[in-house]
Image (cartoon, rainbow, N blue to C red; front, side):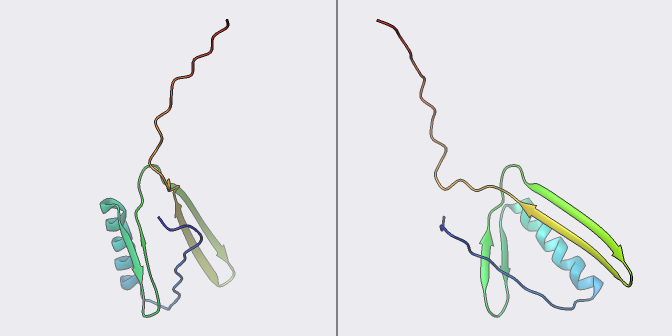
Amino acid sequence: MRHGKTSFRHESLQDCKTIRNILKSISNGLSEGKLTFSDDEDTIIMEPEGLLNLKLTATQEEGRHRINIRISWQVEDEPAKKKKALSVSTQ
């Protein structure tokens, strides 16, 4: 796994059908354990596993409605180390 920050950002105007298809693709990627995001400039591949944190907010302000969906998870850089038994004795 790479260290440091790698990010992908895309912003565009889309119709509801296109956004629905994007959300379906994200859902399928979560089911398969692999998400690939790309555009003409960049690509990022993510492999979600284990427990995921979901944050969803919805707001209505004058003339502007917004939905934010954030999904995050921790990635271990190394395989989990087997815990060794601890032994304490007095002499």
